[in-house]
Every structure is written in structure tokens, then in C-alpha cells.
Image (tube, rainbow, N blue to C red; front, side, top):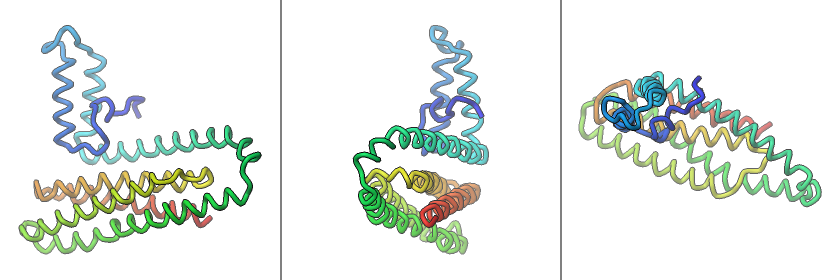
Length: 230
């Protein structure tokens, strides 16, 4: 996997639509291509831009890339968390009692983990029924409107979950749990936006990709739950 982040190369977010990715690619090629702008032409940059677009412009390769990126980010987060825990170990040993630590964990579980988990479960478990209803007639305007309303509701629930997740810092002992929840929300956000393309194009690939992202999110949430129960 390239050392360069393809999203950073194209200067787009991980939530960018395919149209936004294409627009960013065209803009950067125009900027760095020697035929259009000889003063700032950069062959190496063009190579990186082309490589990034080749991966991100295809839904399947983008999904594979996002999964690899998620794993790399997770390892980085865990490594950084371990370094932070090591630096804080002496401070916590002298300034915090075991009771304080337990209270912090209980507070995070009660105010962050449980309400966030409930919202994410609601989003994940609701998709199958929506897909089944849409399958009755994927071209019916009323069903498509209801599907759009459903996606809007998912976006609202996901925003609520993200706000609650950021409301308290996670206890170091639950860093793994917090990481799983964070990436679960990221996958759901991508999945919702993939599903939102279907009413615009009637392309089943968006439904399949969205469902796959929801399945990844479900697995991540299950791993978070298992880490809490250890």
C-alpha cells in the first residue's frame, strides 16, 4: 500500500462522493500537467494523483482501500495510545486511585458507550427491512422517497452518535473499544452515502456496496462489544 493517503492526494475527505473525487482529480491534473501549466508542472505529483484516482474511482477498489486504511489507522491509533498510556502511567499511579479509574470507566460506559451503541444498532439493524421494502419496486417514486427519508433519519442518528462519542474522552483501558466504535461510525457514514446514490442512478452496485459497508460496521460494533465484555 502506498505511503501516500489517496484521499489526501486528491484533497478530498473520506466521505467524498464519486462525483467529488472525479472533480478533484480533473482539477489537480489540470494544475500539475505540463501541457496546461508548465510553471508548476510536477510529474511525480501527477503520478500520485493518477494512482489515487485509479483506486478511488472504482467502488470495489475504494472499498478495499478503505478497509486497508482503516486497519492502518487503527494500528497507528493503538500504537499512539500505548505510548500515551506509558507516559501517563507514573502520573496515574501517584494521582489517581483505583476508585477514580473505575468511576471514569463507568461514566464513559454509561454516558458514551451505551447510548452510542444503541444508536448504531438502530441504524445497522434497520437496513435489511428498508432494502426488502425497496425491492418490491426499486423504481417506484414513493418507495424511493421513503428510502431517502430513511437515509436522512440514519444520518441524524449517526450525527447524534458522533456527538455523544466526542462528549467524553475514552478511558485508556477502553481505547480498543473506542477505536472499534469510531471506525464503525466511519463505515456507516460511507455506507449511507453509497446507498444515497441509488435513487439518483438506479445502479444496484451502490446498494451492494452500502450493504457491505454496513456489514463491516456491524462486525466492528460486535468487536467493540466483545472487548467491553472481556
